[in-house]
Amino acid sequence: MRKRVFVTLIILLSVFGLCACSEKVKEGNDNEGKDSSATNDEIIKEKSDYSSVADPSENVSLEEKRIIQDQSFKVELGDWGNVRFVSYEPDNSIGFEDVSFFLTKEDMVIYSFPYYCENNSTENYVGLFDSVAAVDFCDVNNDNIKDVIVIINYVTGAGPQGMTPRPRARIFLADNQKFNQEFTLATDLIDDITNNMEEKELTIAAICEYLKNKSTITQAVEQVTPKPSEEEKSNDIEITLNIYNMNKEAIYSEKVKTEKTNLLEIMSNIDALKMETEDSEGGKFIVSIMDISYDYGQYWNCYINGESLLENISLYEMKDNDVVDLRYEKTGK
Image 1 (cartoon, rainbow, N blue to C red):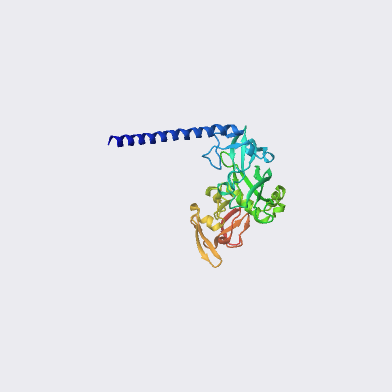
Image 2: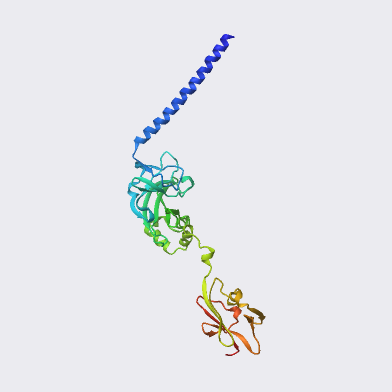
């Protein structure tokens, strides 16, 4: 019995000892990896007060050897000021990883451009990344802010032309409406160019020329431009409305701001006029304004910008800055 207890105790002590040793080995390996990675390449570290669009929760660090030097440029970009635009090639150990783009300042990453492909993987896209063919900074949508156009080459590896680079456009529109300026991926423009431009003609100059007359620019601008509020949409026109009694005295004179254009509808919404109307064969006619009713040949006659209104008042559509005079007078005067 004592022997069994003794053997069991030895086994338990051995198991605990092995667990402790394995934990120390694991910690040692983790620390060793951290120390060695810091000395392999020159690293550009991200400033803590800026966030990465690609993944705000992770710090972005760039290996110098993966920076595509001939397609990385110093440039002045709107609110960012003088920065370096960095083209950053994929990690070869990760299959189908796409190229990435960053802004750096004083060797710090301050902005990460959004990915085109989900998880930055080209597995379901045109093929494997080959090279960055061109980069340009120009105002694509005429808002006086520089945008970014990139042409990227990919290879499919399939068929006789599998290793022939196939260019694709990437367009980032500057969004100047946000507190910290960001860039929006113009997917509408990118898809338009992919579907309608020949690959052999895909150059920066050709893309800029193509976009000049495209209505899709307006659609792309709407992605980064705040829509006007209902208050901003209203008050589209301003008219002057004058009401005269039979003595030609002005009993009402106001400037009216409204989004409506039908004159009779505009007047019906002004409580002070207390207007009453009746249906007629040609539309509606005014029975009473401010308790003054037609009687004994006296009628309400309408004048627009000094000219007698020949059509029925219920049919007239107002224009901005129109002057409306309603006069209680005998017909023909």
